[in-house]
Amino acid sequence: MQSIINLIRWKNLLMIALAQYLIKYALLQPFAVNMSLSHFEFSLLALATICIAAAGNIINDIYDIETDFINKPKQIIIGKTITEKTAYNLFIVFNVIGVGIGFFVSNSIGKSELFSIFVIISILLYLYASFLKQTFLIGNIIVSALVAFSIIIVGIFELIPAMTSQNQAIQLTFFKIILDYALFAFMLNFLREIAKDIEDVDGDFKTGMHTLPIVIGRERASKVLFWLSLIPLLIIIYYINTSLYKQPIAVGYFLIFLVGPLIYTSIKLFSAKTKKAFHSISNLLKLVMLFGMLSLLLYPIITH
Image (cartoon, rainbow, N blue to C red):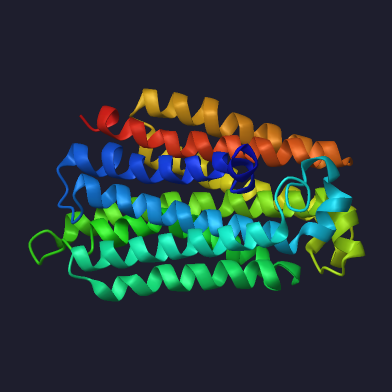
């Protein structure tokens, strides 16, 4: 059982669920925004998202067996504690559950066409694992977009079906806030993907992948990652300066938990050389993403 929990990457799934619950209960509910889903239906939406993400993690590990033997031999699960056949069966089970729940939730709010979202995401995760991951930057963009979409999907299911001509302005205002957080998640996850590619360059090269560090070299990729890391940093500083300057609590939070760690990450990137250094940078970016999502808890405080 422990092997299955590790295989589906429970910490990443927990972070997806946390982000979705924060959007509903820290951002939307305190402001009495019109929403479509009941508490139960929303829990099902979160469960569907997590199941499909878990299936994506499993199929990713199935296709990564060869590279993982080189990159992280001590962390291998498939082939050691779980057979490849069992892993593939789990992939199918999680997908069926996720898509099935997605179908139920879509129909329960009278928007059966939204069911196609779950099918498309499931297919994209399979395509990512099977061959998109090997292509230059395309795989990084796809998986980062899917992480961002796990946030956007809350707005699609909660806000859009409940939109009327009377409440359109307020619904779109909150949908834009959700999009801002999704963009933040996309940028940080994209940086993480490149950091992981640099970390895993040896195994990826031997298995014929075409990641950024393989195409342009590890050192150049590191420098590209450094310059890219400045983009979310500058955007957050601009946001603090234009939108939060009258809210000292929010300014303090953003400076300590987002700006500070991002500056530290950029400094580390400038001199990073080893596999261990890029691994710690990847973990640091995940931590910044978590703090970014937790900033949703500030909305009820700073607007009242």
